[in-house]
Image (cartoon, rainbow, N blue to C red):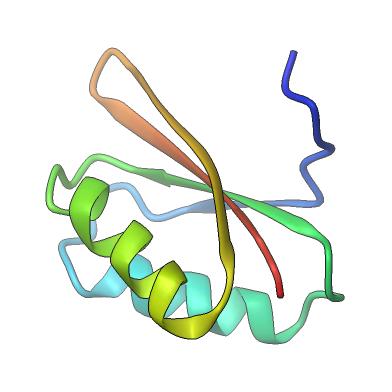
Length: 78
């Protein structure tokens, strides 16, 4: 079990970059500081782009894991 609570799950499967990052940014706008979003994507480019986006916006990358063809990326709003 993850050491954090997931406050929102964003299903970005079927979208290619930069859309998972764009959708994550829009979702985070409606979340409180410290809340965690789980982004589900099947775009391998997201494994590179979402962490870079998170760092550039000051949000925290908590982790990333792959289950079959789904990449789960966990971000904390800063």
